[in-house]
Image (cartoon, rainbow, N blue to C red):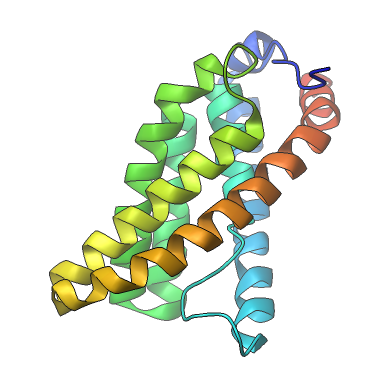
Length: 183
C-alpha cells in the first residue's frame, strides 16, 4: 500500500509576496543549518570517502520544488552554493553549484510525477545521483578524468542519502505544508 500522497501546495504558491519572502527566508535558514550540521557530522566519520554526505539540505530543496516549483528549488540551490563558496571556498561552491543545478533540473522534471510513478524516495535518489554526477563532472573538469573512478562510491552514497532525504521529506511534508498554510 502506497502511503505517500502528493499534497496540494497551490495555496502556498498563492501566498502574498511578503509571506513568500518570509517562507523562503525560513527555508533558506533551515537549508543552511542542515548543511552546516551535515558538515560537522560527516567529516568526522573516517570510513566515508571525501565528499560523501547524506544530503540533508536536499530535503529543503525538494520541499521548495514541491511547494513553489522550479524557481523555489533554484533559489535554495543557489543559496546552498553561495554558502559552500563562503564557508568552504571557490571549488566547493562551484562543485555545489554544478551538482545543484543538475539535481534541480532532474527534480523539476520529476516532482510532477510524484505520487504517480515516483515516490519522494525515488525522487530523492534521482536527485542525489544527479547532484553527485554534477559534482563528479566538475571534479573531472578541474582535475582530469582520473576522478571518474570515484563515481561508484558516489553512486552508493547517492542511493543511501537519497533514500534518507526522501523518507524524511515524506514524513515531514504534511506537517510542514500545514504550518505554512497557516501563515
